[in-house]
Image 1 (cartoon, rainbow, N blue to C red):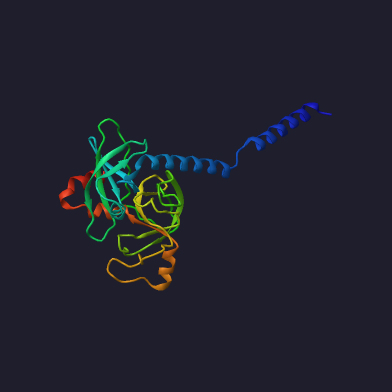
Image 2: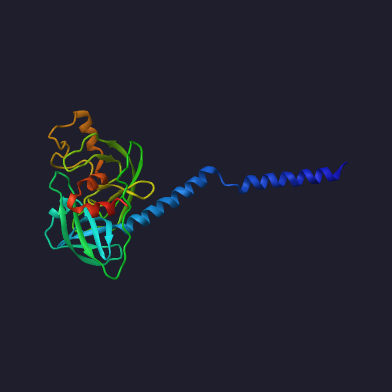
Amino acid sequence: MDWHKIILATCIGSLSISSVLVAPTVSSVEQSLNQRSTQQLQKQAKLITVKVLSKDFLGSGILIHTKGSVYTVLTNAHVLRSGKAPYQIQTYDGKVYAATLQSMSDRGNDLARLQFRSDRTKYTVASLDFRSSLTKGNKVFAAGFPFDEEGDRDIGFVFRSGEVSLVLDKALEGGYKIGYTNDIQKGMSGGPLLNYVGKVVAINGMHAEPLWGDPYVYQDGTEPEPELRQQMHQYSWGIPIATFVDLVSSSDSNFQAEVKK
């Protein structure tokens, strides 16, 4: 009997079994990578998402630009209309700053800009994907500060995943064009909708299954077909960030150029 061959075969067999036992599966590696990526996106979203305040909490906003110590916040016009000036901005670190209204869209788009000054603390601002061409099935992430069930105060920062379900050829009233499955609640209006690389592609503004009003009318006054309208009810809606960039007036050409960097 050749003991050398038996010993060699035994060693090789042991090595093969060990390899099978310790080698991670492809799916587990992918899952781990996706989980880390989502955690990173959530951390990034928290840095750029702010609370918009008046006497009380009004809604959410996005840090979109900084020049020196002056920061610009993008939110929904309806968020500001739910309160009265003076407005305030609360950043992720809990600091509260006096804010001034810079603009409120008068072209049928539910957008507004605020500014505040922070001389001591530097904040991260969002990367904007104004060239985004979202399509059905694209994964997206929504962030903001929803109200509690009583509607008295926010419950803290939330980050919710979902996917794009509808992209309209023409905008609804308010500029809404992107429908998605993320669970948007009152208070999250004005917060960011991010793509998988962490760039802002839209502004949250309308939750699914509205209880009153008829938000599903196009900006030109026409209405969607009944079948499409029924689909619209199922989804949350956002305004493409490209709409904001396009609306920046010629008097703000420098601001527009800086936002597009």
